[in-house]
Amino acid sequence: MAMPPNPASKSSPGKKPGPPPVPEGPPEVTIPDIDRCIQTGVADKTFSGAACIASVGGKIFHRGIYGCPSTPPPVRKLGFDALFDLASLTKPLGTGLAALLLASQNRLDLNASITKTIPELKDAKFEKVTIDMLLEHTSGLPAVRNYGQDLERAEAKLIASERTLGTSKAMTFVRAALADLRLESEPGTKVVYSDVGFILLGLIIENIVGKPLDVYLAREVYRPLGLHDDLFFVRLDDDRGRQRLLRRTFAATEDCKWRKKLLQGEVHDPNAWAMGGVAGHAGLFGTVDAVWTLVKSLWESYKGDSRVFHNGTVRRFWTRSKRLRDTTRTLAWDTPSAQNPSAGKRFSLTSVGHLGFTGTSVWIDLSTDIIGVVLTNAAHPTPEGKQEKMQKFRPRVYDLIAKQGESLPIDPEKKTGAAAFYSGPIIGTTIPLRNPLQGPRK
Image (cartoon, one colour):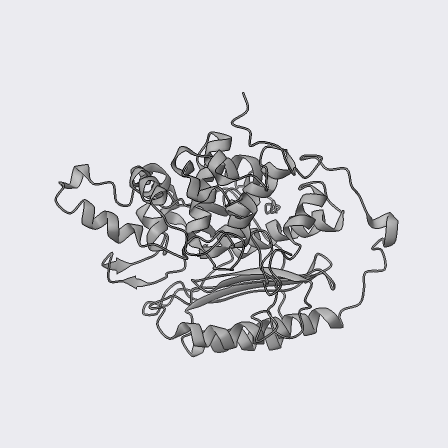
């Protein structure tokens, strides 16, 4: 969402003009019950900082910021410009979104075998693995591999200038390691939440568009929505880019023993860090306003009220997979589980959302039009013991969000029925079924 700037103040004669006006977001409006829930999480040290936006029908009814960037001392309050490590929200809001866009443009066949994509996957063992299996975590690939530690051992005898760990050059090692992968189950028969699958998907997308994943997303999605300054990857080997970020506030994550420092302004996920900060499964940073704006754009496209994304493709990505009976997965997203859902008990089964390991989450109820974005840094200063705390915190805060959203009056100006549906997209026209994957456009 492009935030309107403050009116420029008139400068006095003889005085130099001041700094440019600071962008201003929506007004801070909070619900006491939601406030207390999140402030309790700060007080009991589940996280040091948090941000939350909740809306119904696209209208914000709660927007709050809490705590500080890291465990005090010193104490410094967070502002709405604070950036959170979104962790696995990179999957639906980054790599999955790129796949959605390419599918709507007929440049990515969701049913194609991954053997038709990049050279490393030509082996016959990958023949039955399709793009949509990567998106819904039924590919048979393992959940995770420690590529960072493997690469560290492989480069232990090299001098510092020859090491690639923590840079984009590490992708050469990772690509070779991916080619040696063995499937742990028959493709399409079992759900295993797989970071490895999305690392592969990121490489496939880069091969199609002919650009790095972060560059493609910035140019094609984030910049057109005015979000490129508040939703981005942090490249570890881009010294100039990181220099520009020194003035930004990042919520800290883990005090990492492996990297021997507090992680603040660089990706928490060890594999994404090993690959230089940009990967298909993790690496995206964002403010709460930017995340909500992007999710709202998807929701509007789903409802037919916007042409930013193709309506039919968004609907396909937000429909629960029928490949396996007991799965909660859609394409790059998740839906509430039957037992102890992280979205709480008030978000309906038609909701879609996703979680991030660092303490981030998004849920959209497609029945009530309630959107909740809750970003925290629960991995700070250590992720140990935080999983149990977050399993209690998330349902509690989303129940409060849903309760408040349900109590608000329905917008009388909102169109319903056929009048509410708009099907003329700007991006793409159909959902590809059997089209081959197309490379970079000239």
